[in-house]
Length: 184
Image 1 (cartoon, rainbow, N blue to C red):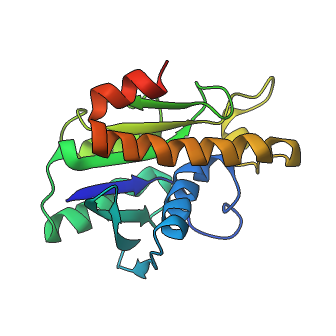
Image 2 (image 1 turned 120 degrees about the horizontal axis):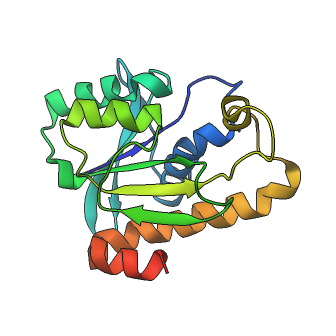
C-alpha cells in the first residue's frame, strides 16, 4: 500500500493559502477517486485505488510543523516502508505552477517536510513538490500563509492536475520514468 501525505494547516483561515498546496492535492485526489476522508486523532485519512494501486490519503491536522505526528499515528497502525510514502507539499523554490518529483533529499527548510523526515527516520522517500513561487519582497512566512491571488488560480488548477498525473505516473511507471517525464 502507498501512503500519500499532503501537507498543510487545518482551519478555514489557511484553506486557500499557498502552504496548503499539499492539502489541495489530497482534496483533488478525493474528488477524482470519490474518497470521503475520515477523522483520526491527528489527521484526516481515506483509502483510494489510484492507477490500480491501493493508497491511503492523509491530511495531517497537527499544523504544518508537526505533520510527522499524524504520520506516526498512521505508521503505528499500518507499517509502510519509506519508499511507499509520498509527500506532497508547497515549494517556494519552484515557480508558481511547476511540479517536480524527487526520490529523496533534505527538507530545504520546509518544516513540515522536516517533521516527516524525523518521523520516518530517513530522507529517502518520494516527494511531489508543488511550486508556489517566492515573494518579490517581504516575509516568506507571510507569503506562504497568504491565499493565491485570483489571477493565479488557473496556474494552481493546472498544477494540481499535473501533480495528480505525476502521482499516477510514479505508481504506473516508477519514480525514475516519472521524474524524466515531469521534471523535464
